[in-house]
Amino acid sequence: MKTSAWNALDSHRLATQNLRLADEFAHDEHRAQKFSIEAAGIFIDYSKNLITAETMRLLLELARERGVTQRLDLMLAGERINVSEHRAVLHMALRNPAGSVRRYLLDGIDVGDEVQRVLAHMRKFTQQVRDGTWQGGTGREIADIVNIGIGGSDLGPQMVCEALREFAHPRLTMHFVSNVDGAALERVLSKVSTETTLFIVASKTFTTQETLTNATSARDWFLANGGREADVAKHFVAVSTNAVEVAKFGIDTANMFEFWDWVGGRYSLWSAIGLSIALANGMDGFEELLAGAHFMDEHFATAPLDANMPVLLALVGVWNVNFCGASSQCVAPYAQDLHRLPAFLQQLEMESNGKSVDRDGNVLAAPSCPVIWGEPGTNGQHAFFQLLHQGTSVIPVDFIAAVHCNGKLPDHHRLLLANCIAQSEALMLGKSEAQVHTELRAQGLNATEIYALTPHKFFAGNRPSNTILLDKLTPKSLGALIALYEQKTFVQGVIWGVNSFDQWGVELGKQLAKTIDAELKVGIVSEAHDGSTKALMRRVIS
Ligand code: G6Q
Image (cartoon, rainbow, N blue to C red):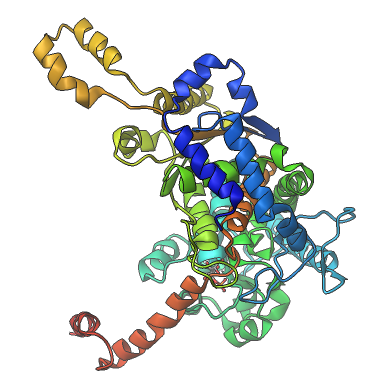
């Protein structure tokens, strides 16, 4: 992993450790332009990172050494780059429009035809539900849609439906149930009627315990509350790769929307897993989302590395983690409608790159994915931003905002943007002791008081951030934004040398609970468990 560019970056970091961003801006009036990029309708200012032109040159050298372009070519060519699961990674094919000059082949076969076939199925179904021709068992229009799924079969659709609230069908209310905690399902079922509710059981494998448990309870509720067995088909549809299990569950496979094993769970919102998005926003809206992502994909696939937005975003992240020591990354969307974006990115990045071994199974010599977390601004400012400004860890922040608002309260939007911009400025500039002294003197404090208060009011500044601006939050710009982060994740995975497309840590969780649940069910605790586990189980049983 520690290639010559890596070693050069190590030395470069030592040589630039006293770099002060405020000075860099003072000395170079073009710094903001130099370290900004615009592509696929998105603008990023990454100038408030501890970088110089030389940093970027060396990072780009690292990208070349690590073979970013070659790995991208393998992904585009449908090679099985997910080596531990022996799968191709072709989610980009899901957003490749019909008739595009780019083709995605798997074992020599164009997957585009299959993609278009499922999109047509989705179009027909979503139109019927939206225009009211798809009716429940008692002849009423659908009013509530409940997506039952977890992880990749939940976070993406939920995040997008929340983000595109402004564009949604006025009659349809979307609900998402993921947690196996019955409280999640009960909360939704208490608000909906069997006559007007459509359940989407979304599961790639259709074997996930949480999803099947929730889906079974939803069907029981339907039947216990006036729904007839003959009408299950009108109220339950499935999205899956596993037709056999869907049929076993009792859903008519004519009402199953397919996808394929070359779509990873966390990359699946572009597939039929996005059915809830298409129901809420219409197929045209869904295809706008795909178009935005395709726009970013094409930029990623064709722009040179030094003018490539996902590459630059990834490299700045690598600089912060591997050379400046950041172990976490905050995401702060200044957009309430993007309130689930941090959770979505948490899965995207941490499940993809939260690995300790490289593609060949060798232990990594340097840290990989940082902890991704965040909350919408301005809320975060009144909570954890204290730590971002004055805490002992330096945590880079991605500020994300739309220049224009969708809503009817433009004054709110101006204030929102003012806060967003002010925060990145404050993190970067900090507040010097001299400034604190002047402020306190002006407030009439004496020398002793000023001396005592100064350390508390001092801000070191020099804290890195990116500012990512959309023109407006629309299906298209959102598609581009999500694809940006997907491709950033890909590039970082290549730099760190990991397989970004498996998730054995998730699989472990799927296995473990089964044994314990079987024992809890019969009230017998196996002696094979450790002391703590046995004691906890006995406490639960009693
Ligand atoms: C995503 C992961 C994981 C997965 C869920 C749900 O990349 O594999 O989050 O999406 O475990 O799996 P199913 O869709 O198979 O139910």
